[in-house]
Length: 269
Image (cartoon, rainbow, N blue to C red; front, side, top):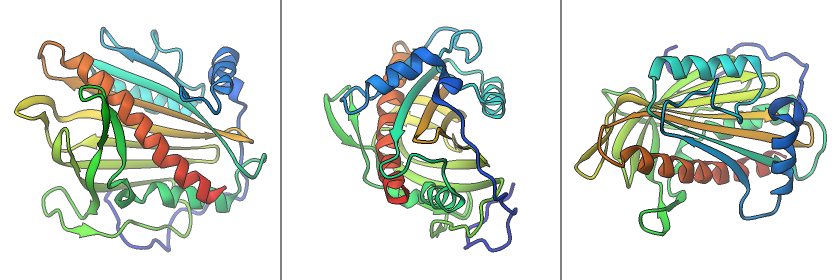
């Protein structure tokens, strides 16, 4: 799909009906119990790192039981054939409502997820430095990977079924790179995926080749809460220790994106 960058007036019509699934139905009773027990604790997530023959089918116990998303994730996995996969589950408790999200809330949350510029300045914990570090020094929507002209964050007046944009993001670890973001909306969920259009390097060391990274962030409505599932998958360079290093970095960066998301969700709910 060709990217679009202005306030959208003519898009796919959204159905007035909304749906949600139970947390147990999405991730099973054990994972649901564990996530609820982590509420208000520093350890607010469940994670799984795979660096040997990674799989979302045989090895994963975290992939949500949502047919459309499972196919989306499986297709990404097949296309990429990654050497490292990092999955994380989070639970966001809605602060003011226990009901299913409304159309206005879905639209508000979707538009906030499109605010790529607001990723500028977010921080993550750097395991190698043992301290917090800026994730993206700058983040901006652009008109394409070649021209790279900056554009304002897109805003929708009605939810689309899917949407794609390009972004230029300066990462203090992997440098100044171009990414494509693909967004998909469902009545009970949002998915969005980030794919690198340029090769990532850690200093002078090649880390991830072009189109070899896919980071997917999915939001599922569960009535009184939102289930967040993040999975980062990459085909990394054959450098000793690189898969483990990238795996740790992906997990810490997912935490940073989750914190960014909670600020957006607080504004909506």
